[in-house]
Amino acid sequence: MSMRQTEASAWHVVGGWNHVQPGAACRVELPGAEIALWRTEAGAVHAWDNRCPHRGMRLSFGIVKGDRLACRYHGWHYDEGGQCRFIPAHPNLDPPDTLAVAQHATHEQDEAIWVALGAGPTEPPPPLGTDQPGFCRSIPLPFGADTAADVLMRLAGASPVAPRLMQVRPEIGGSNRTVTLAVQPIDETRAAMHVFLDGGPKADARLAAIRWTVGLRWQITSETGAAA
Amino acid sequence: MTDRLDSFTRSQWIVIEDDAGIVRRAPFETLLFSIPIRVANGPDGPRIHRLDTGEALPVLRRYGYVWSALDPAPRPLFEVPEFDEAGRRFTPCGPVGVKTSALRVIENFLDLAHFPFVHPGILGTESETEVIPYRVEIRRDVDEVWAVDCGFFQPKAMAASSAGAQVEYRYRVAQPCSAVLYKTSPGRAGAFDLIGILVRPLHETACEVHAWMLMWDEESSDESLLQFQQEIFLQDRIILENQIPHLLPLSAGMEIPTRADATSIAYRRWLKNHGVIWGTCEGIPEVTA
Figure 1 (cartoon, rainbow over the protein chains, first blue to last red):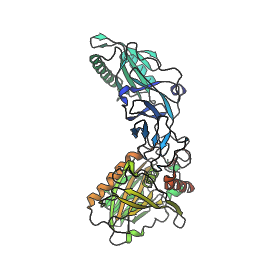
Figure 2 (cartoon, rainbow over the protein chains, first blue to last red):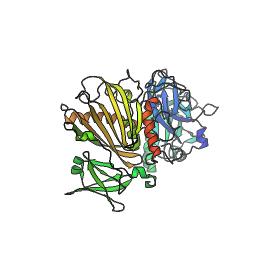
Figure 3 (cartoon, one colour):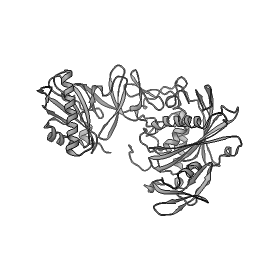
Figure 4 (cartoon, rainbow over the protein chains, first blue to last red):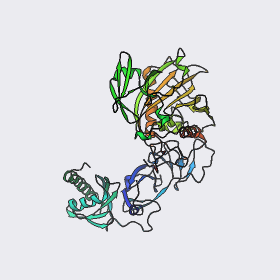
């Protein structure tokens, strides 16, 4: 798989803040890259190549131990810099500096987790709204990111506000509210959409926004004939 | 994909099914190196044909299994003299389908260092993770990879084990897709139990795994022996299907081994020296999946 330069240098929302909880790890995909997303017990989020350099095991299956990630296969420990610090088969060995996992840039803002491949852009990602945006819901989309944008414009009446970001003002909880849709590209046939609602953590409105998102997903599935 | 089938791999006998499985399942269709084959059973024994060309393939019955090969004149099958020892108990287990290269399955079978993490409380424990140095040798007379003097502390080494024990292991790669381990028998002092693994490549990154046990164990029920092997294999399968790439890298640089991986290093080198391509990253630039 080749990695498009535009995707390589861009920020992407890969999930809401709770997609990976403290002490957990999960797998996320961006074009040409599979990423192990994990959070230390203290709460710092990291995005790494999803491959232990030893025998290729997906690090998203790893176990978080404090501020380290331990590979599920042979228990090798990696610190927050991706550097291997402990090899259980050789407890007295000081692992060489060359034993390290490649890292990607991460940023947390507006209850979103952003990832950019490699060192990432120098600028931080754009805001996901104007009034205390909060995360509502993620849904998978059964088409590439460019098609996804077209579908969201057509079916939800969303307008682009930044690359891979769209806004719409549906009626939610009795009034029209600004909803930001962040499209995460995956490959030619898959993308994900992460939904954020303006207006701070008002529980009732957020629940209504989640219902609106689920309804949109149903509409996408039925009107495009695609199995989401 | 069969243009990736090297002559060394092609000339090996490959497991098709255990004897009971042939009786139970035949006639059936399956795959051998991505080629569809049909396995039938007749009064004069199993017959195997390629479905694409109609060609009859060689058939061998040995060690409780039926074997076949794409090459009309396969290399002789490896010898396991312990099969002729009276009093040993033979238990075949499987098959289990695994979505990865057959060679990744063999390499995992040869690995000691994963026991405390993948099989905790059974084959290892996180309080004893060190892999003490062992010897690896290529036995030129039989052209096999052997690892000897391997030792590991195991909480429950075998189905019949009643307590943890320091267990001695010997590993043997008999074919690219077949390996045997010899481990201290809990049922007979000074003797070794044998566990073997026979893998049939369906495709380069999909295979069917048969395991067998040849043990000094008159106590355990068949069910408990099978359950023991199945529990361990399920734990391994989660690892195997999540190693990236699924093809085994033979060239240095893609994966970084340590001294505990001496058997794996020798296995990869032995495959490379024999020109093995099938199931490896050889000839594939920048494999990522």
